[in-house]
Length: 119
Image (tube, rainbow, N blue to C red; front, side, top):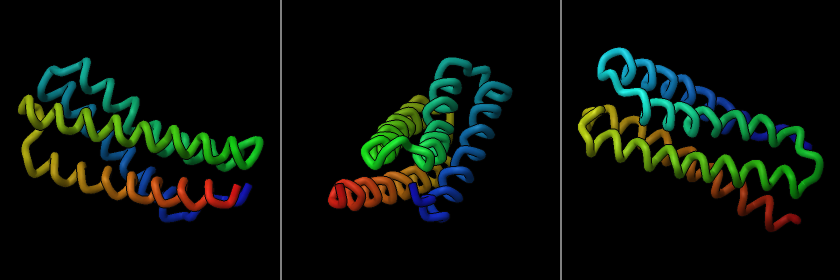
């Protein structure tokens, strides 16, 4: 399989770093352990699945792994909303993370649609 566009790799990795730092903040500063683990799992899975897709066993497997990454990005968006609405994070941090997450969602939707059209 061809290596994915480096923009998607870089943005998902950078986002994962932000999510790790968010989880650390939630645990240390807010003593929040359940939601912090949920967002840590889904937010870091996005990039991990993108990387995993590069070694898919087939074109279908490649697309499938990207589709799962898209699901994880959507789940992360949910956790971000919940953290903001329960006042664990402020509006400014929420907007910044949500913008990054939405950008990943857009890139993944575009990639999955393009790849599915070529199957």
